[in-house]
Amino acid sequence: MSSMFIKDDDFSAFVTTMIEAGPVYGPVAKRSRFIFERLESPEELRLDYDVTILPPKKLFFPPAQDLIRFDADEFKSAIDPEEKVLLGVHFYDVKGLDQTDLLYSERNFDSSYMANRQTTTIVASNIQNVSDRAFFASVGAGVPAKGHDAFLTSITGGYVFEPLTERGEALLKHGAFVAATDAQVAEAEKVNAEALTKCKEKHEHSAEDIAAKVAAAFDNEDLWSELAEDCFSCGSCNTVCPTCYCFDVQDTWNVDAVSGQRTRYWDACLTADFAQVSLGEGATENFRGSRGERFRHRFMRKSVYLNDKLGQPACVGCGRCSAACTADIADPVRVIDRIMAS
Ligand code: SF4
Ligand code: SF4
Image 1 (cartoon, rainbow, N blue to C red):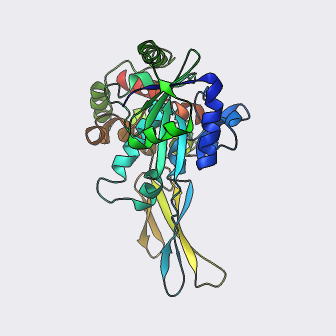
Image 2: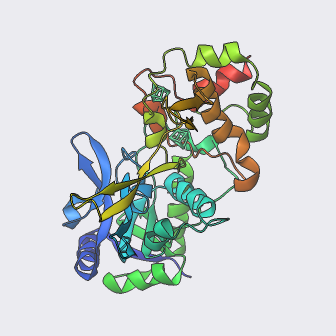
Image 3: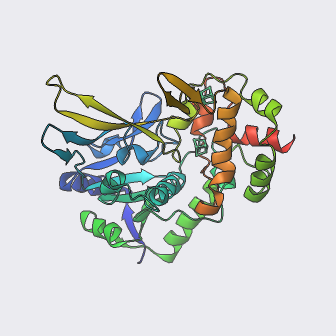
């Protein structure tokens, strides 16, 4: 599909027309930070954001999501998928969604996630500002993002819009697009290549070397205890991560004690009770009872266990975990550097 161009002066009308046609979500400012939110007007859209507090997975896999509602006679799906446009997703977050798409469909097809994922048109956008803790240029470099429907790049005087699917192409009707010139396409490629040079942090080793060293460090309990020494077991590094996908399911009853709902909630493997299971008669067993064991599990998941399945590490280098950790011990670049030096 051919790349198109829209002038800065026409962009606001393009977003307005999309909003009039249906829900549009995009990055908006929240005090000094950014979140993905439904847009009420084009002025709210902040394509110059660096990173959002939570990744866009929250639109398909919300922190709390009713799955079914039930009463004494029947149960019904509580999932009500919404046709929508998600605008302005950075490529590392598209890669996070690519991973979740695979993991939620390869064996047990997660219809609750997929229902909203399949009704969403995703427009990725270039990274205009790079967050301080990002290292997306040094992870999974050989694996391109693929789950988006179009790619938008800010260049001189406007935007290059590259439709990638029929859904992406269908958005062209909302704006005053013209065919992009070769010079405009070349400028867009240059802008996107330059973003990869602006990360302040980077992995110094290949994913293969990291995976081998992290796996070999599995039994080094002193190392994991040292790395996790200041961990509060709060789970923030999990909950902000675009590639974490664990959840807990709970049933709650209404006051009639007959009807109710089944809800799933984000879960976090760094929390103390994540791996606690019942042995019956009130007894429990926690098979990752120490902070070091939980910390190790996170890095095994991100750097080792899923690499073959995903074709890349289960980390896209967004840097959210580094910024979210109160103790500042979650940064994958620093942790991997320490392990590589062990
Ligand atoms: S955010 Fe930091 S303190 Fe909280 S669980 Fe993760 S590593 Fe531990
Ligand atoms: S582990 Fe950290 S840097 Fe990697 S994808 Fe998750 S939040 Fe982003």
